[in-house]
Image (tube, rainbow, N blue to C red; front, top):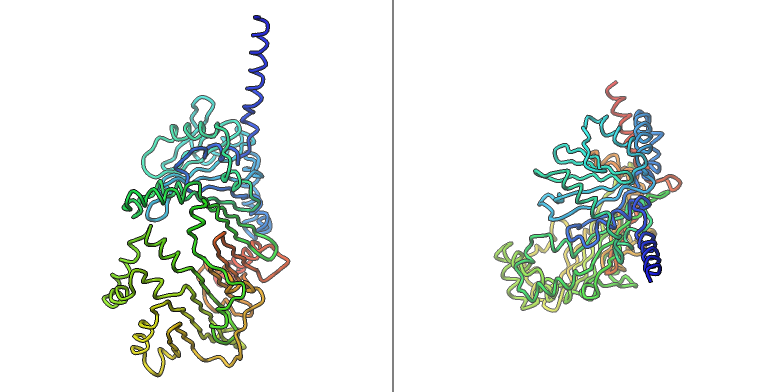
Length: 481
């Protein structure tokens, strides 16, 4: 019997070792996934393909900076496996300036010696604790093991060694499954996920003041609810996409509506549209959500003015639904001048609810007969229509790239084509717009999409943006000389 017991023990041990796997074989993504397992503090997480982003920006050919960037990249690539990306996690609660309580980055290590050498070359002293080398410089702590590096940023006084040890221990768990795995398995230059459940659990908001029954209901809504996002920089365009991975309860409460026929376009006047925004909501569902989980919203509206308080009180138990029907739209229209400037006019549509007549009559009595700031206002029981009236066009013209305009819960576009953008004198952070041809945004109950199209369809949009700043720098240097 003993020999069978011994054999069974050997076989069991073999299977346990086989199933546990070698941690050194894990990817950076799997280390992050393991860190997140049952972790109620992580609100936002994801992965950045920094190497691919730099290559798409053609960093090796950036004047002046290319030599330095190539040298730095060679050093980091010798130490880190950047092909696996830089994984990150932001933990709550978030401060008023949106800063997380803790930021962590996880990077696969190629050579522990090369990495520690690079860290010490930055003037940081490395200490040892078991198989971990670490350093702390004020808010920043860096820990390195044979196959993983963890970077932590945390405000205030904290023990970096302890924080790093705890983080490494969490990465040794089994990776997460379900929606976290799905989010991290996307393809893209930047991947992100937001946990509504953890955001709520780590935040101190007015939701804490809700009655117990409402708090329990809200907790059920956000349970296992995420938004997954990806950003891809491609030839000629950048694509920002998100998908709502909500609980069934939360999806049932979503209030955006779709209109494949885009009926609102017929209510937005005439002209060649350069910019537009539309919204189409189920006001009953939206107001019910506000009543259940954001009761302070209506009270804050009433505090705006005495007139607003009177309006709100006159509209009954469902003031927002009785005032608006959920359809809103705006287009900026106008013709291009020879110098590339635009003479803008605006058309605005506001759909009114069941008691909109009372508001429209009060509004009509208040408005001057000759218009408002040069804009014509037409008010009736069902709508408010405001137009500049400067266009001679016979119909509303929407650019071809904005074919989805007016069809989703929220749609928006802006067309820069033919405009002299540099004449706007944008500040540095806004000059990236010089590389853009147009932008299109759509939002519905399932998620959102934004497509930014560059002026050159054959060149990666990151390279186009880099070129804008390179040319701007060259102009500045030329002006100095």
